Every structure is written in C-alpha cells, then in structure tokens.
Image (cartoon, rainbow, N blue to C red; front, side, top):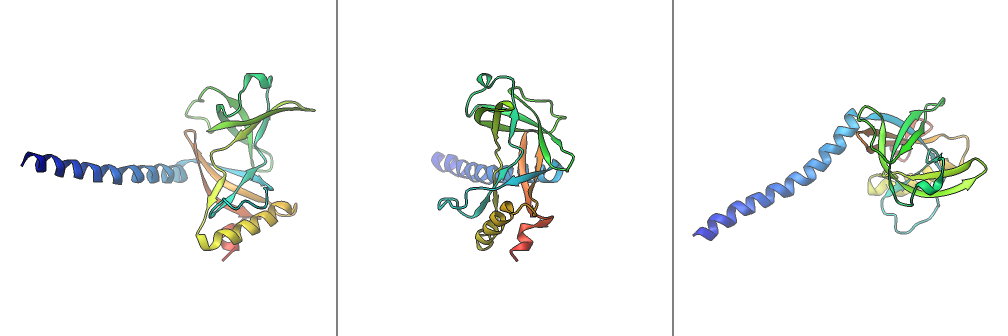
Length: 187
C-alpha cells in the first residue's frame, strides 16, 4: 500500500517536470522575441555544401571580428560577452568584447572566441555567435538555403538576419533578402 502512495505522486512529479522544462525553454525564447532589442546582422557567403546540416539555413555574419590590444590575452573557445551598436547603414556592429558580463541595460550576447589572428590592422578576434542556424519547415529549408547562398554571393542583394537580443541571449526572428522574408521568397 505504501509503495502505491509513493509511486503515484512520484509519477505525477515526473510528468510535471517533463512538461515544465520544454515549456520554460519555449517561454524564454518567445520572451526574447517579444521584448529583446532588434539588430540586423548582415550575412556573408558560406560554404555551399554540407551533407550533415539538416533542415536549416547556416548563417555567417559580417560583424564577427574586432581588433584587440593583444591576442595573447584571449583563448580559443573562451566565453566572451559581445556588445553591439548599429552602424551607419542600420546593421549590427561589434562595439566591444569583454570577459566580464556587462550590465543588463546594455545590448550584449554571450559568445565564444572562434579564432585569433594578426593582419595589417593588428590583432583580431573572431566571434562565434550562438545563433548561426535559422530553422524552417522541412519542405522549404533546402530551397531557402539555395536562395540564401545565391543572394549572399550577389553584391546587389542585401541578405541579413533580424536577431533579437536580451540579457545575453539571442534569437533569430527571420532572415531577409532585400527586405523580403526568406519564407515568402520560397512560397
């Protein structure tokens, strides 16, 4: 009798936890989309073929590197915080990178150091953003990927992702080709 009194409440608790975890994840993403700051990240061309990608568009961003005083102060894959500003064309640009979490009032995202190099401008840090995939309906993803690749190689077409940022987290709202949502282009 006591075993049944323990098993049933434990079962109910397990079911509630299984419902709470995905609901919480969905709520957080939706909250960022509704209340986060919007930034337009201009995209750059990507490798045209990867058989393991799945049903999404792989995105690469132009605003992904910044000059640093000394590349030796940074490590590959190190967690960093990237603050953003909007450039003169209305696109996101890196304002600053830091190892310390900025104040909540600033627009920033948690990211990682992708790699470091030295060029004619000095030491450069390349950022790996946590948002580089835009998921779509399975039936439209391949065609959207093809259209996106074509557009990102054409200098006359402006391709960008509208990303919402809040408290260090980011969610891609949509991908646009010349101000038209990619979903509408592949309809």
